[in-house]
Image 1 (cartoon, rainbow over the protein chains, first blue to last red):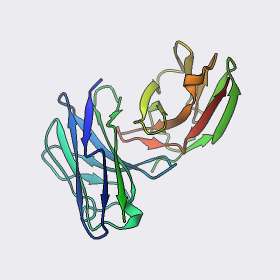
Image 2 (cartoon, one colour; image 1 turned 90 degrees about the vertical axis):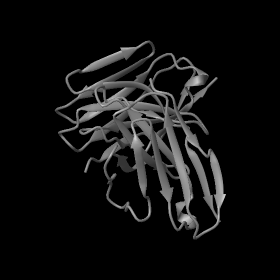
Image 3 (cartoon, each protein chain N blue to C red; image 1 turned 120 degrees about the vertical axis):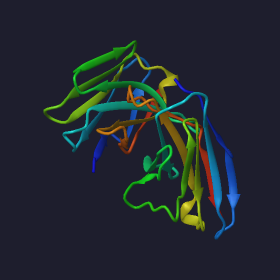
Length: 114
Length: 110
């Protein structure tokens, strides 16, 4: 399975600011995704990070709020823009090869917005 | 979109007993069903998965069953141990995107 890292592991931010989260995979992967997990809750898919094209967003998530980049097959970023306390959550990236359906998760970024 | 329901939300079992978690899904096109274990403060860990062309899969003390007609699948943990205590999530996918159930908090009592 791929080894996935995220930076930062946690951050405390002021409302109105933006934070960019990085996700690095140790091997080339076909699929990369971004999820949000609010405290004590399940995981919700934010978007699919597409290499070389715009990300595909799920219902309730928009590009202006969560811009995503994926410049190559091993790296992606998620930006949480114009943050409010409601954005306080754990943000996780996942990766999969596409051929096997298996997805593996990064350790997550715990974001607190004050 | 896909809707996955998971029951029970909490499960307490005596060490050595079995634990069963059940999930139902709504999209008949779903063809991949993974289970994740998440310990407190850790990332979700893939523990077992099943595809739609298989009815049952087993890996040591863990097994998953799938009933495509009824659109439900289950996780079975036998001979539970304290280290099995965690939150377990089921998920369903038809296009590589995962839709997760709400999670089951499993507590194994020593």
